[in-house]
Length: 439
Image (cartoon, rainbow, N blue to C red; front, top):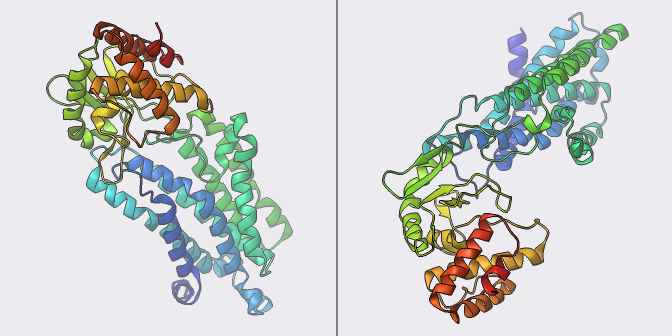
């Protein structure tokens, strides 16, 4: 009988449509046309992050389903039947949860399919964020089902969408700077992440316990018939909260970098050209232009002899080695290396093969002078006469002035100036322009 009821529920309720909408929204939130396809864990983490929108939606979907008896004026009739509350509520709850979880999971298939065709590195446990997210939408659906039966108003579902968004986003906006591990209880939140991040097992377990506890409390409230039972229904959530907080890691350790993902993979031969394991499939594109750039840099004293992909965030301080070009590399969705408006070789030569750093992100004036010095050094190394037109106007003007000044000096002085600027850039100093243009 329960199977037959569930089948009728599946055919006649809005649950399948809700699942389809969740799948479409999850796909839209996960898909990034600028992100390279070959990132298994990054795809799963971004999909998990989509809970900030999907969790309130699942809550509202449950509430909409939960008010059906009231809307059909069948509440008294249904509750007067001799069937236990658990048996009566199981079919609609199972169907709703199944459609929500199915839709959430289907939204990831496109990204995972492309990763399977492209990536060379599949990290262990990439599926855990997906499973945790599935528990999250299941818990939201059951809680929403109870709230819909408790408050069977047309306004309940839309208010739950708004309230759910506030509940998810509010703690992050108000208390993120505190670094409290309690923030990890908010659906979809793992702190600061990048393509190398992998959720710590404690974050996965802590969030899974919390969502299971919410699911248990939601189910207990949904089937409870007495006031005492409803009061006891909050026990799973209370226990789950305590267990989760004891298991969850500090916020800055919730999704650390996967050490294997940042390991270096190098091309055969010399000079040495390496990328992180995560980006191994694009290594062949980098080898020839990198080695050409190293040949050009050989004009300088103590030149670099290797090009290594640097996984640090662009503009941050990096402990640079004199014998290494620390290359910031972005890969487009089609698998080609993004080198900015110019070529890969030009990107390496800008700054005489150094990492861009030396000023705060919001210090525009300092960055204008730093970038101008870097561009001028690259132009000198390439033998170019002027900065390209696509260069930002203030940077182009300063770079052209620096190049003109540099070219008026004897050749050995020019080499010394560029070498001195490179030394300053290796130390992340902000005075690169002065070093390049003044004695």
